[in-house]
Length: 71
Image 1 (cartoon, helix red, strand yellow):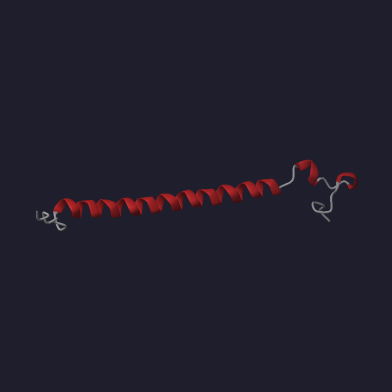
Image 2 (cartoon, helix red, strand yellow):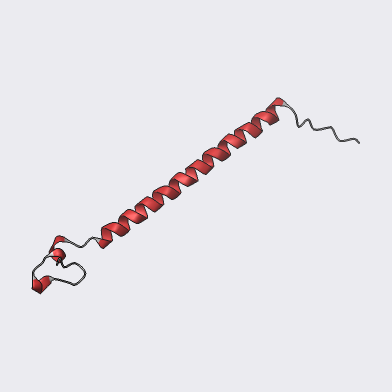
C-alpha cells in the first residue's frame, strides 16, 4: 500500500513555523531578561554586603579598623 504524500508547503505548516520562530525569539528574550536580572541582584547584594554599618565607619581610634579609617 502506498504512503500518502505529506504536503510540507501548506499554509498550516508555514504558520506553525512562523509561530515557532516567534516563540523562540520570545524565549530568548525571556532568558536574557532573567539572566540580566540575576546579575543586577547579585551585584547589588554584593555591594550592600561591602558597605559597613555607620558604627564601623567611626573615626575614633578605639573603633577604627584599618579598612574603613578616614585619614
